[in-house]
Length: 175
Image (cartoon, rainbow, N blue to C red):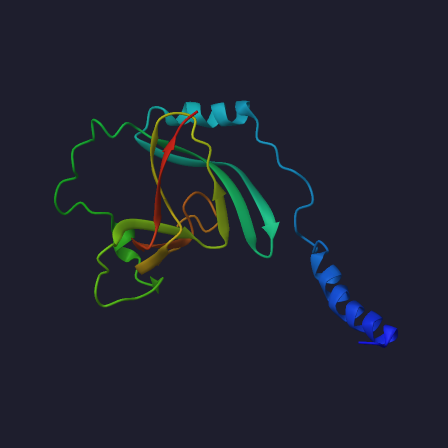
């Protein structure tokens, strides 16, 4: 290209949309969020007497209808698991979830693992303070059912639950 004016025009045509898109949109966060040890300890103290408990410490609107949530998740030791529930005492709420979500397949994939959960318009962060386990990350949900539990975006909802396929397993340990 020998015409300098054409070069300037083409450069501007590329850079102006990039600069406009990079600007913060109204409603997107522009400040940091701090969660103190005292806040985490306060929630954690209420969870110790229970086998399973999830409670959000902070929910931050990150724009475009999404939120970032830091939840305090407590799981009692699995070394001495509680007895299995009696037959016929299944979770009626789970049985009522009939709206399909995720990828629907007639044949169960060989690598499918039950218990996958995705959250609608929500991303999560984890800090493991004690113990450890296996984190199941990424992948996709197959033959899921949509749940409207916690419609305000509380722990584990609303979202899709089903079989996990194509995930990455990662061993995680507390500090």
